Length: 113
Image (cartoon, rainbow, N blue to C red; front, side, top):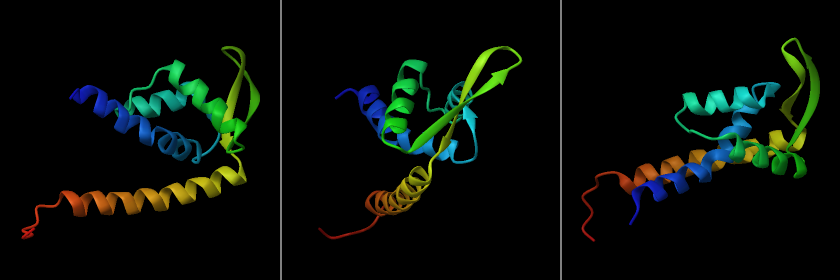
């Protein structure tokens, strides 16, 4: 079994949650999202991020607006929609439940099975 593939699949599974959580803090530019993900050691390339942002926008979870930039063309800033905020709340609850379940399942218990 390929450990790198398994690790990549685990990261991919939580990427949408992490991106929505980052955006929930306020309007943010895509390269800043990438920077947050890199700092969290969830290395993502633009080719992964942009299609995901587009899908989240098409699902009504994100919206964006254009802002003028002093360093070039206007920039697209993302923010959560009200539906996106509700969706993130549900993901937060699911994440808490999942963390608890994984901790319980991987805890060193002395069960006589």
